Image 1 (cartoon, one colour):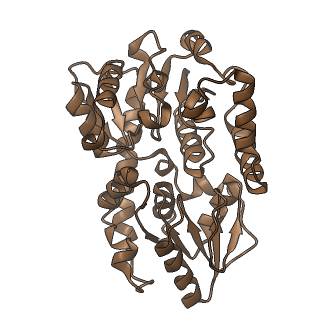
Image 2 (cartoon, rainbow, N blue to C red; image 1 turned 90 degrees about the horizontal axis):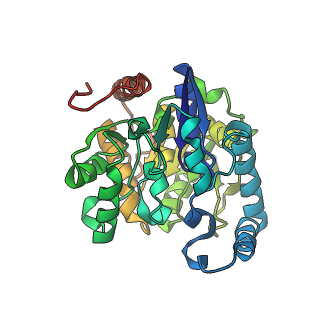
Length: 373
């Protein structure tokens, strides 16, 4: 049985981040592997850029304040921490620092980095470990649906040099977006393919097994990565027109000046809301992946403050032919039909292609001059 170590953003306070990690672990386990999430979080994600010069005890205190600055943040911390402890953490992978990462070389047959924006140096503080720099045998290094979260044209020279140097750790890469494959092709000779986000590798029935059904019914879900008046008003008008309750997931304690129910669910409860919603309004990439996976009537808007990460949304909408779900294109045609038969076929084809890639990785396929079908 192959022993696989996954390096990803499993401790991010993000439903998409923890659920993609869960999904990849589950899929690999179904392929008869022993799978562990390596419990490592880069320095910048734990403390931020601003506190590098401070002593460790003070930095830990700052981290504590960030986690417990409000009732909402306390709930968020425990919701995600409990999920991580239940599904990911074990004594062999807990809280690895950089020195301990090197000791893992003898523990695993293969290492996989991804999914999520593990190749984004702006998020990781140029942390080489997400490029599996600590792995001695580069034949053990693979990615799955890794993302840069950036497009080539906005990369700085420093970022291009960093990425180019670290791509040398791989013979073959699986990316999540075609924009990421373009970056790799511009900066290296590493072969690539584009695969589905792990959340799409599990089907609706798989996700329902860990979901918790909400007490509410007949509701509209509003799931935002950032609050914007346009998308909030769209969701409010939709719920009002349909005479439904509007439920908003509010991770970031933002003030929203419209009448709605603000909830802070666990990841399992979040899945329950998404499974049972009548409509979903979102500007989140993973809000879209789950809407598609669950065949929900959904509506999308692009992020306004973080437009550099919109490529992942555009890529998914283009793949499924669903740009008509943008709220600028919908207007008030809330019940515009979605051809789920064709879309489900597209997802199923992508799922088969992605599973085939993972099977080849597990067979320790030496890519070299060979092609991956």
